[in-house]
Length: 131
Image (cartoon, rainbow, N blue to C red; front, side, top):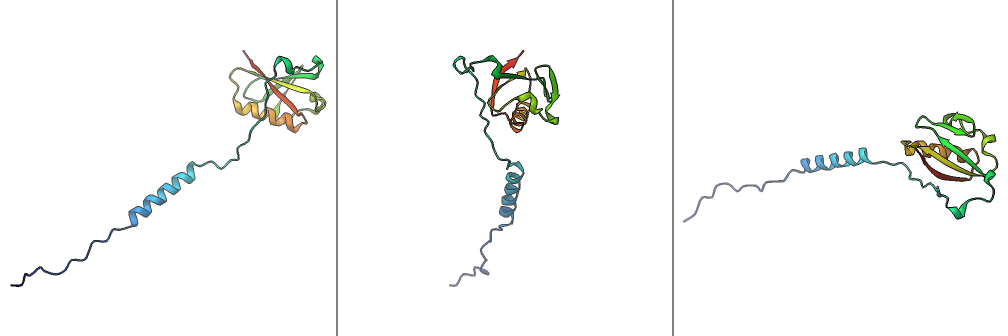
C-alpha cells in the first residue's frame, strides 16, 4: 500500500538580511564612537630637592590663573591664546616651573606647555597646585 505524503516541501531558507543589518549597525556604532586622534605623551618631570638648579635666577615661575588661559610670569599677565612673549622665557636652558591654581583643567595645562615649548622653552616642569 502506498502512502500519500503530499507534495515534497522545500527546506526553509534562512534570510541573511537581518544579519547584514546588525553588522552594519555595529560598524556604524564603532565608527562613530572611535577616536582617531593621535595620542601624545608629555614629559613633565616634577623637580626634587636634588634636581634644583645651582642659582635661583635660573628658574622662572609661571602661574596658570585659570581655565581662561591667563598666565602670569613675574609681574606680566597675558593670555596663552596670544602667544608667549619670547623675552619672558629667556634662553632655552632656563627651567620653567608651572604653578597651576586649584581647579585648572588638564587641557589648559597642556595648552600652556605647548605654548611655552613653541616659544623656545625646553625645560618645562610642574611645580604644583596653588590653593
